[in-house]
Length: 129
Image (cartoon, rainbow, N blue to C red):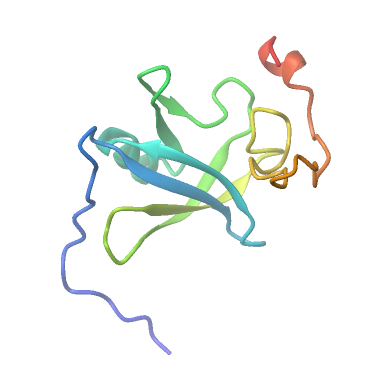
């Protein structure tokens, strides 16, 4: 079956701060790796370079995933939800997505049980915990 093409232009609905939530998902396993935010520039850079870019709300700046750690996200495709207000980056993740050293940022249950092993030591990579 040949994929259909929507003839309407996609118009990403950025919030009042100019941001859109982005879920990074492993292209093969479909594991959810992280949630971050992107502004228009980050989405455009992701689209043009093939590597995930986000906007840091705490640092108020654009960042390329893995620029410090080397844990890059190569983006295979970008999906847009039906309301055009959330994106999914389908990625190949180098080592781990989480700055804590875990493959996914979703490594704990609500009661604090850790469900996966740490893949790298964040103190050695970032000089902080």
